[in-house]
Length: 398
Image (cartoon, rainbow, N blue to C red; front, side):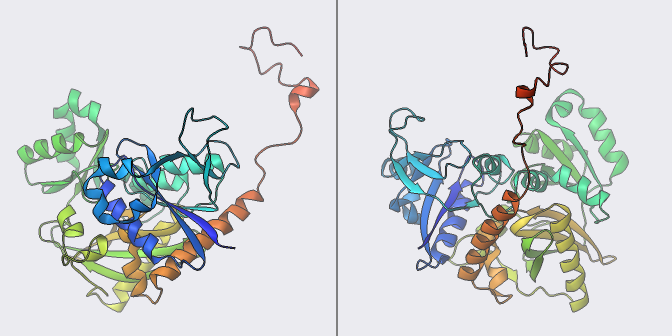
């Protein structure tokens, strides 16, 4: 019997198109002798669709036509209901036909509303096996501020930073500029706290550029982070596969940037006309670094994966300050572009093998979770309990 795997992609994110590319790459890599693949596309408006027309990248040139030729679907937020329903009539009507029974979900959603724990929370509510980080680790990994706080507390080096909210910025710009200039020296890097793919990121070499960069970042996120910029920078990426307690690291890659930092265009607009996605960007695999440096990075990357309680496949981006050879963790991508398959191919694991491992990891985690205790069979209300704790429940009698 084949395993029914639903691959979710798209989403309400500025990384929507990159998610589509990554997902179609993953779908094409599955062993069709072992798996039935169910594509589930989430539109930019947040509606879910499935259909064979979603498997052809050319169809995404006209997204209105794309969804008109697909079936709108949904899942009920009911624990244990793993069915995908066709959206006809009332959403919760029992007459909604079942499109497919899902055994495993593979989220390939980049950025907000998908990689940040929101979608993972839906899956955990339903209780369905899924690959990748859970709600907590997704949220911590997505938010650059929270992630750096956790890593620094755990002894993993990160560059100095200052963070604040958009409301603080709009009400007290002078105080925030003062904090940045007191703690950091120019140049600095300004980033939205919860976006990936280098969206909304700008360098600032003086106060005027800092004002402009923060105004830009504030358009994308409610939380903004300003970081010390390493001027003699070498960026290195490394992928991790497995669980927090049992994982392996890939070879390292060195992405080739055209400016002071790796831009959206560097990541996704490189390569030839016949390639797309993160694997199409210019890079060196393996990275041009010593074996000792590579091992230091892999150890740091694996510890980052462990400390953040990650699962599945992630990519950790680190920075080497070539002035003193210090290494810092920049960020983790809990659903990396192209699922970092090119790093695993260079490490001896094929793309089909990678997808197979993700399915097996999802099923194994589900078995482990099911062995835990989440509720007690005993009903304390039937024993007359809970009266003292219900001070605000007027009229409650036992």
